Length: 111
Image 1 (cartoon, rainbow, N blue to C red):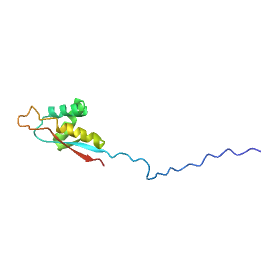
Image 2 (image 1 turned 90 degrees about the vertical axis):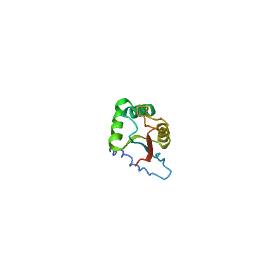
Image 3 (image 1 turned 30 degrees about the vertical axis):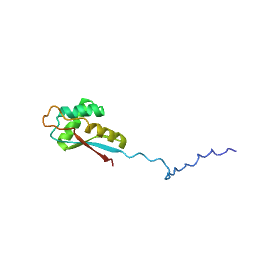
């Protein structure tokens, strides 16, 4: 007499509990537009602070100019606030005489 084939193990259910690891919240670093900084300044700033190449930095400069703001980074709170401090400390645009300081950037929690 032939035995029936062994049955496959019953699927198990994964239960998530409150002690499951949670992902760290993400934050946006948003660069704000103004009339006291040139495209060259924005491209240079994004290259030096965030390591972006000229093409990406130019695309972001176009967006901030046309929309008034642009998300330049999404990362941990510690990382974006560190880059925000670097942007605020970058200094004035030497190409514009009336420029008195750096561009502004804000940190917002990502949805």
